[in-house]
Image 1: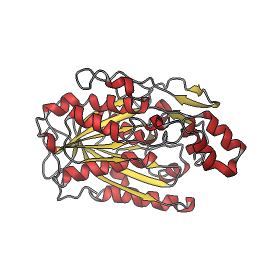
Image 2: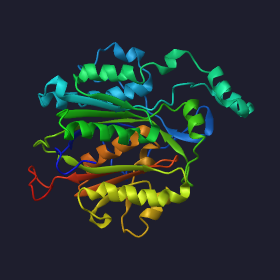
Image 3: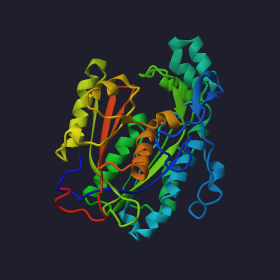
Image 4: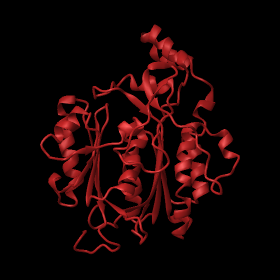
Length: 360
């Protein structure tokens, strides 16, 4: 939680990459047509091509050794480089935190899917029997972090989270803590979705979708620049006003956990749900829909536009909120198929200067 006696933390820049493009598209934009997966035509996906890295930020030879997931992450991070350098902060005061899913780790081979289907009792052995060499892990975690840190000159605190859909919230909370507690003056928070491969298919098969609609995968990335100064640019800043997370493996306890997460996210501002003008959450999730059945809120979400982005979903939604929306308070709520809940409360500044009466 961002406590009232801590330094305020603001989102002052953002970048995205997904099926909707490289700018923050409105959540009600017309979605592109999802395409069948090569290895399973029954499933649909929004795939994106690996982007060219920003010139002048990275070594031009770097892209030759990057796999798509790493390229997406570095692309979004690199788009923040100019704004970050404009802050003129010492390198040691810039943190770098990442949400990087590990789903591509063991295998990207369709042979593994077929082998497990034939011998389900030997799932682990069959999985690793069809695992490619170590290059499957190349440029995913520490390597990507090292390239981002070098290019953006981030020599402050560093951390990475690989908890799939919750990694974005973990990374955001860690970065905000470094800033609010005085260990850094700015933080770059980056995230990427998993590549759409049979490995993703195998992982997600253990947690079927909670919504009755079609299951559409997505590929993408997002990056945020957090600072302790809201700045005075034309784009208004968002303050991170609160966050909370919870978990229950028992579906029957899901609603209670969700309510608790929302209340804790709002508590630092002493708000109730009726004070929130905008809610970003997946209305196709039955438990989320039940939570807001009587609140009067229209739930917004980008999943129909870009697909399920996994670890990159939360930061992508925050980027859209930063760029396009105008509600005083925005609540973003996540609920994973595994039973994890997460909430972030954002407060938009009403003018270039916050007053003590406006915010604690």
